[in-house]
Amino acid sequence: MTDQTTYSGGCHCGAVRYSVKLALSTVIECNCSLCRRRGWLLAFAPAADFTLERGAEALIEYQFNKKRVQHLFCRVCGVQSFGRGDGPDGKATVAINARCLDGVDTSKLTVKQVDGASL
Image 1: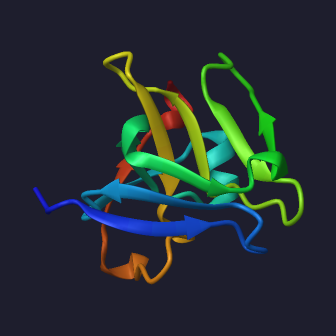
Image 2: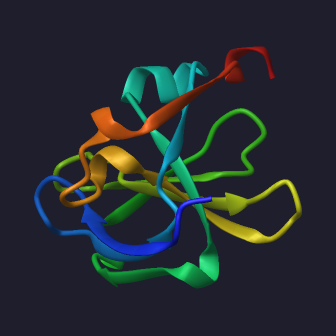
């Protein structure tokens, strides 16, 4: 497993900024109706390893399907740079869009395909 690194990230306009501690070597590309349309490359971190530095007031929540995940996006630019929910173990987890992390070349990451459309 790759060592954890602290990354900075956020939305396009900069209204939402955060830092997150991740071991970012593999990301998930899900084919569900939302992830496919948004172009997510997902990485996950425990909520304790995520800090929203600014922009809480700029976030709007969208929920669908079972309404277990807070899909958060910036009300200014519309970018969804992260979301919140619970992991399979029931612990609070943050889903990070690796495409929204500063300085990360996503072409260098290993992409794991997940068939979320069948879930």
